[in-house]
Amino acid sequence: MGTVETRTRIHSTIDTMPPEELDAVLSFLEDLRRSGAEETAILTSDPGFMQDYREAKENIRTGATVSFKAIRRDV
Image (cartoon, rainbow, N blue to C red; front, top):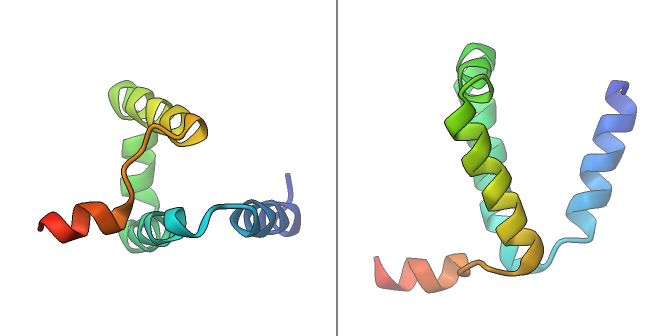
C-alpha cells in the first residue's frame, strides 16, 4: 500500500470514529511519532505487545472500553 493510500485510509478511519476515542488515538499517534522507528520495531516484534494490541483493538470494536474523560476524572 502506498503512502497516499495509507494516509487516506487513516483519515477515513479517524473521520468515522466516535469523538470520545479521538483523544486516545491522538495520544497513540503522538507517542508513535516521538518513539522513532527503532522503538516501534521493538514493540511490533514483541508477541506479548502485539497480542495486547489485538485485544485492545477488539475491545474498542466491541465497545468494551472506558472513556478517557472517565479515567481522567479519577486521576
